[in-house]
Length: 124
Image 1 (cartoon, rainbow, N blue to C red):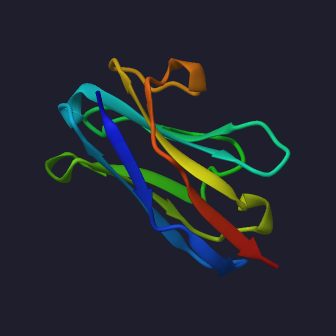
Image 2: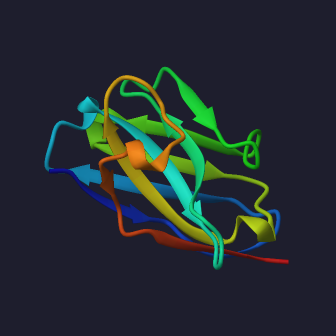
Image 3: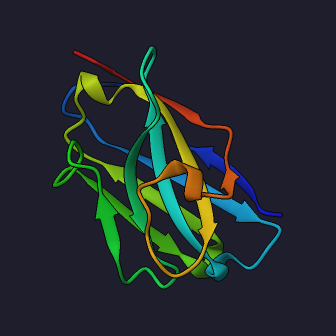
């Protein structure tokens, strides 16, 4: 079992930056590819970013490419999502997720473990 706890959300103005963190515990962190998803009110949960176990490969959703960066520090059991140039349409609850295996995935059903989410609100 893996426990995931997100932090770093908040209310910011458009154009600002935020960094989300996701701390993992319970199992060997390097066994897991990690992902970020988000869900806005009234919308389906969507893929944001993912990173392989070593951090060597990343993947991003089209709406965040060039603005968001996913990274991880395996010695701290933590994955990050650096969000720059935030837009009002980035407003959502952001979830951290983990899956066993070597490859990144954009499919939420392929992730085994989920955090409780952290709210990000971007005002115009």
